[in-house]
Amino acid sequence: MFFRSFVDMDNDKLDLLIKNALAEDIGDGDHSTISSIDAAAEGRAVLKIKEDGILAGLQVAEKIFRFMQPDIVFTALKKDGDTMKYGEIAFEVMAKVHTILQCERLVLNCMQRMSGIATLTKQYTQKLGPYKTRLLDTRKTTPNFRLLEKEAVRIGGGINHRFGLYDMIMLKDNHIDYCGGIEKAVSKAYDYVQAKKTGLKIEVETRNIEDVEKVMAVGKVDRIMLDNFTPELITEALKIIDGKYETEASGGINLNNIESYAATGVDFISSGAIIHQARSLDLSLKAAIISN
Image 1 (cartoon, one colour):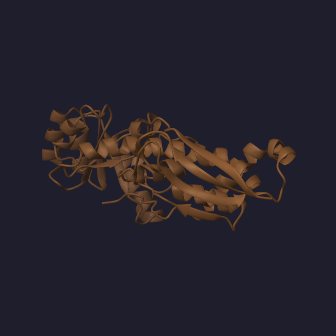
Image 2 (image 1 turned 120 degrees about the horizontal axis):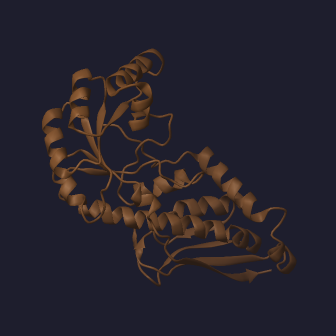
């Protein structure tokens, strides 16, 4: 079995994301705040939940505030992965008012997006409850926001697939066609791993039963993707594979039909929809000055 886990997110990557996002928003200064609020003023803010779902991004929110002001007081009243209900408070933060106002939109953007992804992911994983099949995400993510989108998938109960092009070999249809065939592509990838990237896992996409038979003949892979197969064809393919390699179903799978795919016994189902079709949930940050 192989997949990425981002339980402990890469702090350097997260710091860079926060730095760039704040720079994009603040530019040469938050003139609304600078012009109207004393720089020494301190305040308290609370994160109000305005929509039911799965909470995600609370730890990220704390890191955003601490990036701007390390000595904030952050009190979490819920945790990532909790069910959240309208009217609840997720956290409170005490900091300089300038910190609260300059971080507000980034905190909300991250948490609203992440909570939407976690909520949709949870809907998918709940459908898989009775089966051994597990849910994977994909690289169909928002540029420069992948770290947090994949973390939201994990919070919602899914499993992170490869993070990028560098941490796994996945031979898809275009690789195979450009290379000149599935056997040639697999063999070249295998030789490359042995020579230059020992331990790098290889997955190959198959488009029909004939492709599956070709992969079984050549071997040298870790996982076989069954792309746009019907549940009936997946069942047929699994008999051919006979447990020798991990299997992944992908393409055309949604909340309405996911159980029919899981019932085949396939190891994984990958879905880009849990990220790119997720809807941001409604949250708000309300602040009040407590001292000057």
